Length: 467
Ligand SMILES: Cc1ncc(COP(=O)(O)O)c(C=O)c1O
Image (tube, rainbow, N blue to C red; front, side, top):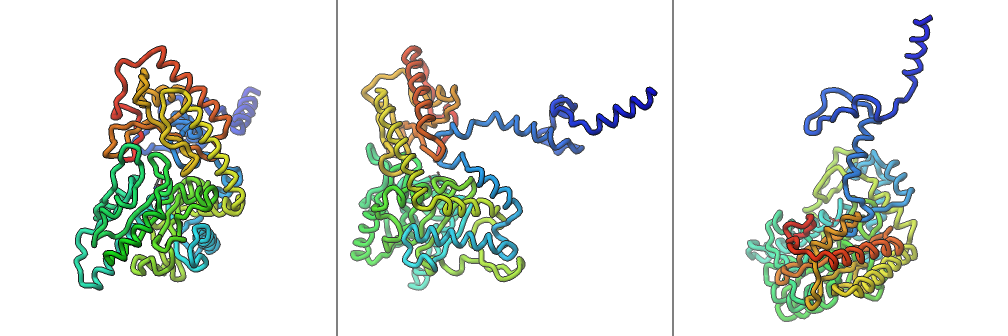
């Protein structure tokens, strides 16, 4: 009798799903830096990892990042469906490859390529890889011209305004001198005369940014191109322009359709953008498009046949998930011009609202209010107002309510100027902006009551730095 009871109990227990925290696996610490000897229950390991991830900042309250932190349920489903699709295996996944090609042509058309149906471009892991590829194309083009003319190919240089760190990486990794125009008080982007002053026979190209990382301003692409046209007439040097439109490539076409910055300008040879920023795709996709096929030197493209068929590949990696590209295609189809316009207009309105409110608080001077350029608000402390804190203190204080609003110093020649910046992104609506403003007001009031006696220094601040 007892025996039967025991057997029944065991059988029932085998079918029972235990409470995830009950077994011993989660009552002892898991090894963290060594492969465990034995298997573990998937539910428990899943729980353990999800719990650990709680210690990360809350992505939606991260006002520092340009990258999307909210996606529609359909995007989650599409990523799931695409989990096994490798972007590089174009023979096995021809429809994924076709979808990538469609995105390339849609973007080429959006950016006014003269031959949108026939141009060349590729998806990448983000704008950084796109920057490397476009920089390489510039370097190859310059080298070919120099070699054909029997001239030296030593010491190539790239001229730019204040650029994101990916261009510093490109310069260092591929042995190119970066001639970055310094910032000046009140001037956060390149001016045409500063560009010309740095160009010479060894300039492989000029990089201009549509929506800078530091403040969100657009660089004057058309004016820089016009200055380079004149320069060519005077010197014979034909210097191509690349537009780093990491963020602006998905903002300007919808909010500022009259702004001339893209392939409408014959000097613009290539454009990059991050699908995962204002392209509204999930993290892990960028784009680079060349003006026309001949803008991309043939010998940069590799052809492989071991995946079946002959496939061309131009990229810094090989295997790469296809889901992000598929999700980008979904966003392009689902929103269309009208949808993107509505989303971006909402973001710009929220940015302007935040800028007005923050500017009205008293201690802050607004450097960029998001009414032009990117929907980004950047501010500094007013030098004429005595405040009991610096922006690093404020950034720290805002973290107590979960907000991540980095403070960072700008570039030479104003590297002593600290600024703070909010990137208004898809999913940061007016209500959240109002909640954030309440916490910002409370933080300023806190410092009024408790002025800081030893302010945080930039190097002590919670890290966020582009340089
Ligand atoms: C202007 C600019 N270029 C390039 C990048 C790098 O983009 P990604 O993070 O997509 O590699 C960024 C990122 O913020 C950027 O703002």
